[in-house]
Amino acid sequence: MKKKRNEMTNEELFAEYKATSDLGIKNELVLRYVHIVKNVAIQMRGVYHDFTQIDDIINEGVLALMHAIDKFDMDKNVKFESFIAKRMRGIVIDIARKNDWVPRSVRKAAKDIDKALSALYTELGRAPSDEEIAQYLNVTVEKYYDDLRKTNLMNVLSFEMLLDDGENGGYQNQVMNTNTETMPEHYLDSMELEREIKMGLESLREREKLVVSLHYVQDLNMKEIAAVLGVSEPRVSQIHSNALRKLRLYLKE
Image (tube, rainbow, N blue to C red; front, top):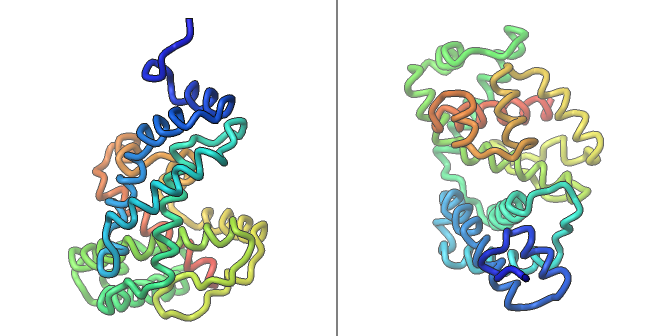
């Protein structure tokens, strides 16, 4: 006896749609996955809230979701949830490229932190501690953490722009960075970029490497990584952002 649609798993429903191209099944798939579109739109609201509405982002995301359902290859070892979440981030990245969304104060804080990290790397020959960075900046550790938190989204998005460009086979688009100058990695081909990132990962602390691996290789979100590490979600976000900042500086050099 054939299962009813509401009794099918997502994988079974996908297989049925690929076999029949039934629009009713496609609509059911959209309903099952639209929460991912909404979640990413909410998570990245800080990027676009000054120049577009969340409803516009969600509408674009739903169109992308419908297109992705048609194009998704079930035989590849990729989860559709990860596939559409990445596509949604790509939509927001495209918007960020077209709009100068980073406040001047946040850009300055990021530039100061980058400068401190670069100088301390050279001086110490290793990754500096949070206390050493704060001392270099002549601020308290608490103030440094506050500035780091404000620059987290900018930092993460900057790195994801880099990965997005690498997968699209070129670096014509400028990856956002704190001094708005073109970064050297724009001229790397995708294979060279992959090699450079692997080398850069070796310069990170073990926990930073683990967070990057869990997020970008295992597709875990910040909440899931926090459970693995036994720390708070904000702490994972901080480790993640700091790791990407160091990787970006490594590539810049």
